[in-house]
Image 1 (cartoon, helix red, strand yellow):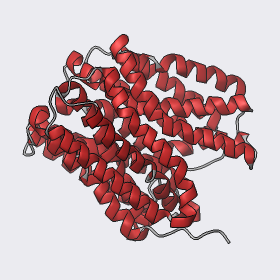
Image 2 (image 1 turned 180 degrees about the horizontal axis):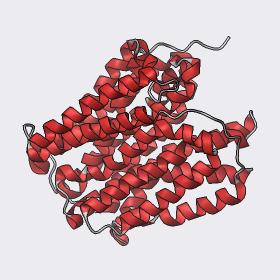
Image 3 (image 1 turned 90 degrees about the vertical axis):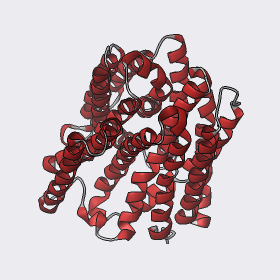
Length: 450
């Protein structure tokens, strides 16, 4: 039993690490494969879009074929994509590999929680397992940043992709030998809704990213916006008719339920934008090595873990809205602080000036996600609890991808890396600020159990 829990936690850690491990390697990837500043964002957003878009559907697929089979299938796809990405000789191949990684992660990720609950007994055993699961999520960003720095500087950027192969094979062997299969159940798949939602997100991200290179009046950009709008209309039509929609429209019937969900869409955009642009700042402006960049960003995760552990103790006393709003204020101030650092940065800027905003930002993030998630799950209708869990994860990934697409356009419009990083980071703070307004106004305190 203990070994099975370790395997599941390692699987979750692998997926979380992959969201951050490429960040430190981005400057090297851009130089070697010829990415533009705007195009480089696709290395991050390709993974986020497929992961976030497909997770709305993949939980039901896992229920149909069995969560153990879904986990094994997803990890196989993830490993194959990782190896392909390591061997990528062009920008297009790497972006395609990152998208395929997201497909694998989306197939496997929902099954991790299902199996974790299925193999543990309620009480202390399950509590210990869930504590390990949460720790993997919190520590994953730090592990990814440090590993990305070390691997990029010592073995080359390709190893931020190759490293998933041995870890994935270890997970596969452990899953085959130690994970039991749980009962499968029949359900209907909302293929139309899932397809329309993915197409809308991809078209929107493509439009914003292309606008940075081609201009807002480009026929290709305008066509992408039109496809996004049309896909959104199709999504609404599909969800009205399907008995088990991937995006239940009931979630958006009032701002009380929609506000926290929309907040979860914009909050990760600030976090992802911060990590992306701070990585470019430290290496391409300040001249840090990849390892120094990883170390400079580790305080972000340490702050996140510290407040993440403290938050559950404070929630019964202060409530979700107070804790979550305080965390969002920390996010806004941390990003704004880093924008000031970027505006005056040069080769003589000390690493300490990067460490301090990272600590504040991490502390804010650690106090934000648990309260927002709790409110989303509490406000979801009983018949849509599963959809709410998938939508919560999907919005985090999609928000990061779409936010980064918008911000790359801002970077291009404000003068690029040399002159626009400060303004772009300041613009990044607008996303958690929007989340603060949405959550602070419409979130309701969860009543204490009787």
